[in-house]
Length: 179
Image (cartoon, rainbow, N blue to C red; front, top):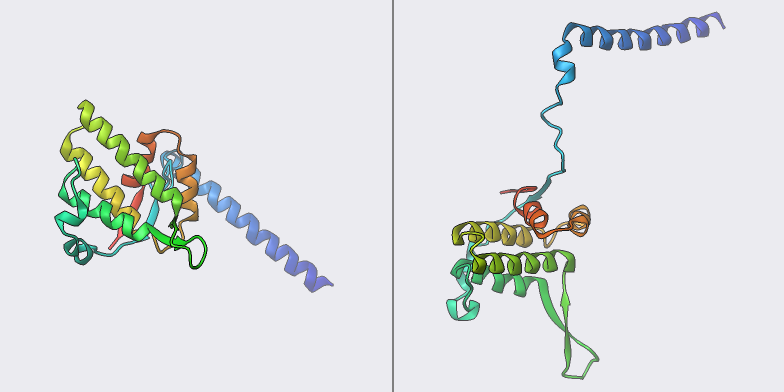
């Protein structure tokens, strides 16, 4: 019983020692305790592994991709987006009618919404062609690389986003692609 009491007192004193050490550290460096840590960000960043799509892009011809006001590369990427994110399934076996199924519809719809917004902004002159092309290329790269990974938290962030500018920033600034 006496040994148990000594052991409990020893553990208690170790805990008190850690608390006192923390207080002593704060007293020794008061300016450091008031600064926010540099690792803390206001909004979480999403990190996904990325792969190069050059081979797939080179296989798409200009005739297959068509025209896009944001450029030929964007037109090719949109063609690949349609090919990767959508597929046709028969409604009833034996019936020639099919329906289109979209993989990850939240992400797909967000990309299309960003495209419509950038095209409208380009027509109005609110954004330059280079800026719109750069932003949308980043959005398309993110869409290609998140197709096969778990994106539940990313999709929740997309659905919580209210305006198109925040949605574009989500894809362009808060997503990190690791090659």
